[in-house]
Image 1 (cartoon, rainbow, N blue to C red):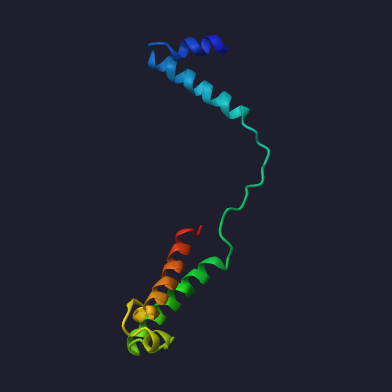
Image 2 (image 1 turned 120 degrees about the horizontal axis):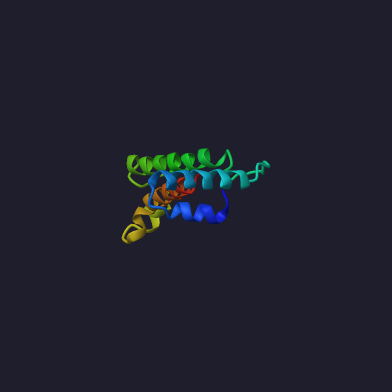
Length: 111
């Protein structure tokens, strides 16, 4: 079927003729596709990425739990000793949640 015939068939009011023309057009397009294999670039994350991010989540959780169990004295006693009256009193909680946030944001970028 020539290009002119194909164009006329696609504009035809006859549904069977139009369907046949579309099928012919898709076959022609399939034959034009290159069948040569091409190397697909690997876009996945490295194998160590997910375990590292999950480890950060667990470490952050343990940090927060230890802070609550020892009433802020551990893992870093500096905040209780030197900032008893200001917002840095909860510095251990800030550190724990920051570690968890880094792990969570890293998992969002995991592929």
